[in-house]
Amino acid sequence: MFSEELQDISWEETSKRIASMTDADVCRALSKRHCTVNDFMALISPAAIPHLETMARLSRQYTEERFGRTISMFIPLYLTNSCGNSCVYCGFHVSNPMPRTILTEKEIVEEYKAIKRLAPFENLLLVTGENPAKAGVPYLARALDLAKPYFSNLKIEVMPLKAEEYRELTRHGLNGVICFQETYNRAHYNLYHPRGMKGNFDWRVNAPDRMGEAGVHSIGMGVLIGLEKEWRTDVAMMAHHLRYLQKHYWRTKYSVNFPRMRPAENGGFQPNVILTDRELAQLTFAMRIFDHDVDISYSTRETPHLRDHMATLGVTTMSAESKTEPGGYATHPQALEQFSVSDQRTAHEVKAALQALGREPVWKDWDTSFDRMNTGYRSGV
Ligand code: SF4
Picture 1 (cartoon, protein in one colour):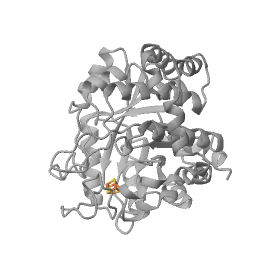
Picture 2: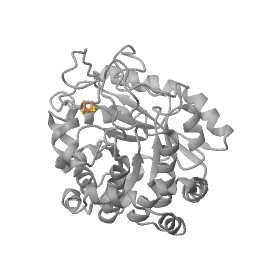
Picture 3: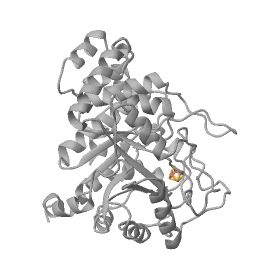
Picture 4: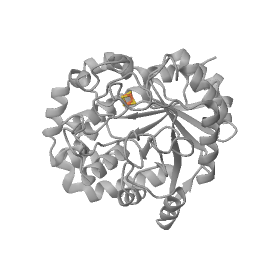
């Protein structure tokens, strides 16, 4: 399990090593076709800032070699904002006296139909808060079953599950799971997650192991940038995690995301660091140079300008026209959002902008039937 490997990686030593990277370390990393985590640390360090243009060029080159000029399009659907956790940075936390919604089967289908009216999305991400009693595995299995007539690639972003539960959901068409660690800083983790099941660091950090064991085809990772001042250390830990997973579950496809917090309005949780656009670009280039195959995803949290720009320089997956409230497409459009969206364009506007940049938006890049053909082989059944 990765939690054991993580115990041997010192947060403090990693921070010091990143801070001590030199121009020579950066040049060495840029000259390699296959980078180590140490090289990645050089590329995200302040020493790499004078090399941003070279990094952008390499990032574009590796992305086009591996993905062509395609951008895979997806859309999230929030099934519920009911949650027993108390993440200090999230409006859905259990102590917020807000109305809670759990979409019914009828509402779920209405949402699916509404999404299909927006654009020909085939990649769907189902999102929930943490309510295993009312929105647990049987509820998710039903939502997946109901989605099959409308979408060919189904992912979830929900509470960490047991391996057998992931396996059960793959039988209902699940293809991918996203589970952000939020932060790899074990010492600080419980400050951000003081109560509820999410407070169990090891259970969360080992979730991708359980996904790999269960034969989930695609695993998504991320840290919430804004929690830790030393964001470079956090993403370096994620790079260790990615390499560990690739070594152990090498048939699985991986994606990364760098959600960043913005200053809170109305007195909410204030980020400990604000990542600038330039730093986010550096991080994206560094990840692509480090790993040519990983999907890099930008959500509608980011502005149209930045998303368009980065679509040509390393990003391979994007959401569009997202609603971050449960039932936001058809049945509960006035519910509270989890976070506000910066890119308010319609999916068709995003598509047109990408095409104008010479990118090809792809609505369908995976069919669950491919996965079924391979399931026995991958899971060793
Ligand atoms: S981040 Fe997720 S788990 Fe935490 S309070 Fe919000 S919905 Fe719940």
